Image (cartoon, rainbow, N blue to C red):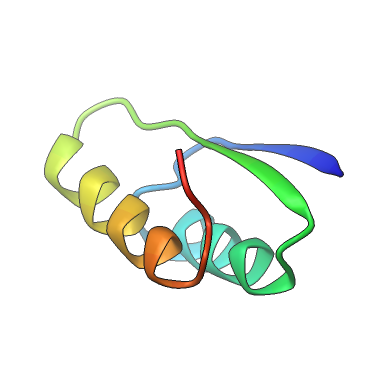
Length: 54
């Protein structure tokens, strides 16, 4: 299993990377954000839908 730390993972390209890695199901994903907690939680919810669990 690989580990990925995605900076800016709540929106844009960072969010897309989080979702892509979750689809591959071979990563521990750490979602980093600085100002938009709501968007980060939305990204986490999408990643969890794809089978990633905290």
